[in-house]
Image 1 (tube, helix red, strand yellow):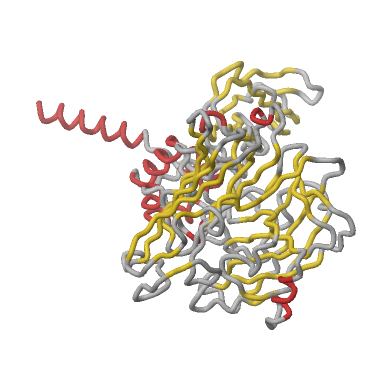
Image 2: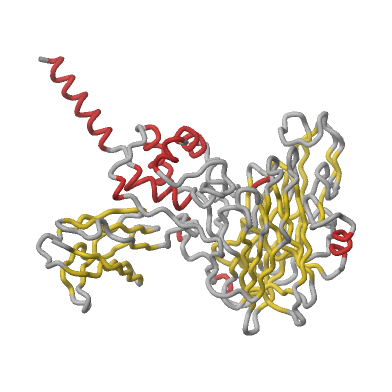
Length: 522
């Protein structure tokens, strides 16, 4: 009898455990689509696609391992140090669901309840017609056994200064474009370098071969288009040449690319945004950037600011010996303001980061950067074997230590300007493929006895879900001021008593009101 009771209890526990395993359709698919598929899709930079249940199951072991060690999605900055706009990180809930799904046997659930697969635009994510679009000449990557950093020089044909309020890079071949950096050059140096190298473009590792170019921004897989808050813009000088540096990884030889960049200009006066290496290896580093062979060495950079400024973003830069880098400011009062901390530097995943909210940098503040370099055999990225003396320079075997600040001169109230409103209290929203609130097409079409509503929320909210007739009159209240969970949800709706016809499904949360047509047919 005791054995029977024990077996019964065990079976109940096992059944309960299985019942709690998240499934692909209602729990995991939306997370993968929001956090992973923008790199993991056909033609994307990732080595395999994550668009279907089969894709995910076939790569479940890799997914579980990389998610567990926080390797994927790639997001080098420490979110506990300082929050950035559009962070590519998993929330603790999302991570728990993915790991439980992998470890629980990767159940599919009812695949008809899964959210629709995302569609990736080849025309860009910024709406509207760009004021300037430039495209590199079709280029065949030669990167067989080493990475290629190729710079393409393109005219702007702008006879007057313009102010860039938004821009985006659109890789011509996402499977080979690792990252894109965009500069404006008025010195003519890039043109000379281009002319000296059989085209198209010229090769330059790290920078673009001149320290006098103006950095306009960059793109890495999964990043959002650069869009400044209203009233801010980066100056594009008249008659400047654009220099687009593209990183083509090893193994892409023979594959072609024709990346383009879209620029949106201000139609009214804006405040200047400057992107300058405030902390740099030339003027404010201690000691000099010299790293002897077989040593691990740290450096400090600091810069005093006599004026109030408003910091919109930050972009650290090192080469292959870099191990970590951190930047912060110390006010005259002694208070510390955190900017960015990258505890595990990865040259292949460096980014261009805006803060979720503008930071005020008070007059009298000193900005600091601390970085460590490993020039030993313990560093798998060390370009020299055996290690050699490394000093400041632009080439692969040289090193750099730069921290670009994206800033404007301060005006009262700047510190209240939000750049990423979808990132409150540290909750990640990633500029998702699904918007902050999304109502999908209900299933099935047409519905007979039951309809399944599908929706996504980037954070928990109070909301209502109703059915309306085509005159906008209430037909059925499904959820009324109910607490809706963060993430993807499905809601069954009994439509057996409704007359056949076309209806409107409406989801309301806060100031958001979304509608989808649906059909009932008996």
